[in-house]
Structure formats: structure tokens, C-alpha cells
Image (tube, rainbow, N blue to C red; front, side, top):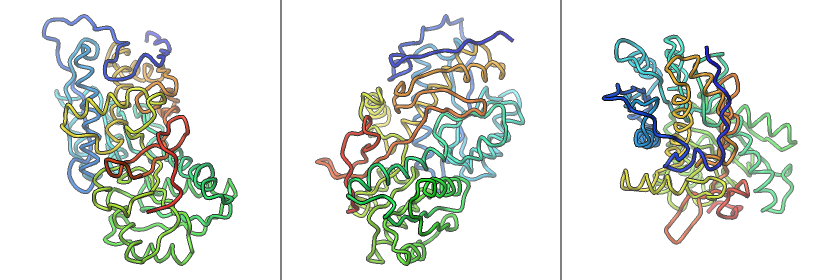
Length: 414
């Protein structure tokens, strides 16, 4: 197999919408289109985030087609709805079979989609390009054709803990070990991974963990959880759940006439504009370890504003969360690797992905690209965000790290 040399892409390379680094390839007459699968939850409780994620991928593919496609071939997305594990496996089987077999699959937002879908793809020898699922289990199975551009659970956990030690405690003027911290998470692969990683980091840093509370998936009410946290006098709550869980949590806090000094969520619905519309001032001040929103320092994440402008032109509204930006940035990396592979032979695709070398700050999310042998991008990290009041209403802004921030942290809810 021909060797694929490492590709170093500087900050002027894989940025913005133009992909100026790409030379338009010579196009033969009527080239056959290249089919790519796109599996996301497009119905059910995760439909809004699934559609937002698909939009980011769609923008990346349309941009790539405008630059000449991949290997001289136009791209076509084959969209599949996977609201649960069974649907994810079934849709992956369809995409991996027969004459209409796709060259690769992009997905899947959650571990419930990524785990079963990528297992089917691995068995079929079809690369799976993950753009959002954070569960550690995704890359712990030794798969050769599964890759993830976005951060893993351990990185989200680290940012949430840094929010306490590096942001919240200094702003409160209180030593971090004195703060009583509780972890609350959904009993699902992603939530369990986050909860375990957070607990490990809190103990390693000598912080005070008073409770780790898991709750059943898709709860109707979180009043019992709130009473449990209140009984421990928790001052900081680290919360991980699926979109909708944060609505139940903050409404239960309101109904109990109690709230901690801070809630630090993890991605999911915490970055959704719809969550802010539903909760209003109840959400004001809430922090989250999150995918980068477009309200980020452009010097740190060049191209974030351009993405938001392109999104507005394409869909008639601003991005609904950071998921669109993250999936677009991740998809650009994988599409570039597909192009540089020079063929659809999966070993060449793997080699091209492992050869990517984009410095941190080299994409519109502030991420870079350097994949390890497991297929994990080592230069992808969440940011600490907060819902703050502005002249245009509430908006989610980056407050940490300092070089990415566009606002100072407000050390209180409400």
C-alpha cells in the first residue's frame, strides 16, 4: 500500500467556509457521485439536536461540493433517522449493504446511536465518522474503522471540574475544596462515563464530593433528585442528561424553592436556544462544559462567525446550538482525509485520517486534529459556556478558557 505522508495544515488552511487550501481537482465527464451515510436521531426527544447536527454536516458537504467534491466526485448524503439503538443498527445495515452501499457513515450525536451503528459498520468494513457522541465506550472496543473528531467524556469532565477550580471558586473568593459538590447524571453510557470521570477528577484534586446521584433515563420528574441534592446541601451541581432533563431539573429547583450556587451542565440541551426560551430567567447564569457556540473569540476559533453567517443564509435562522458548528468542523476534517486518501480503500482512508495534523486553533471550533491509533482526535476540547443576559436577550457565551472567552463569568444563578 502506498504510504500516505503526514499532512500539516496551518491556521490559514482548513478554516472558514472557503477551504482555500483545496485545489479544485480535475473533474471527468459526469463523475459518479460518492454516497455518504448520515445517521442521526431525527425524530423523538433528540430530534432537534439531531437535525442541528445534520445541518452542520450538510453545510460541510455542500461546501466541499462547491470546491470540487472528494477525489473529483460530487458528494450525496443519504440521510437516516435513528431515534434509538435498534433503529441505529437497522439503518446502518441498510447503508452498508448492496449496490447502494455508502463509502462512509457520519453520525450519530449520542452513544445510543454511535455504539450500535458503528458496530454494524465495523463488521461491514465501512468507516464510521463520529461527530458528537461522547461516551468513552465508543473507542474502547478496538475497532479499526471508527473515528471521532469531537471530544470524549473525559474532556467534558475535565472542563466541568476546571470550571469549579479555575473559574467559580476564584470568582466567589472561596477555596475550591470548601465547596460542596454533587454529581447528577442519567443512567446511560454517556452520562455514566461523565459521572465516573468527574468523580475521579474531583477526588484527584481534593475537592468535596457530597453526592453522586444517577437517575433513570427519560424521567418524568426530577423532584426526588432535587430533594436528594438539597439534603446534602450541595452548592455546585454537575449535571449530565439528555435534552429535556435540564428543563425538569430547573423546574424542580423552582418548585422546591431551592437552588445551589451553580449548576454546571454538560452539552446536550444546555446549549440549545430552545432550552433558554423554555426556561427563561430560570436558566440565567447556568454554566456548561459544551461544544463551542458561535459566540466565541474569533482569534481562538477562526471561522465560527462565518459558519453562523452561512447557516443563517442556508436555513433562515441562527444556529440553535453549538452542535451544528461542531459537526461541520469535524466533517471538514474527515472529508479532507477522504480526499487525500486518493481511493476508497479503507486502509488508505485510515492512514489519511491518522496523517492529519492541524494545530489547535486551526478550525472554527478552536480544535485541531491529531488522531491516535484508537481513532480519537486528541486536539478537540469543550469550552466552558454560560447563559448571560444581553441587549438581544439571553445568549450562551464562552467564558473559559480565557483566550476563547467573549465575556467574564458571573458566579451565580439567576
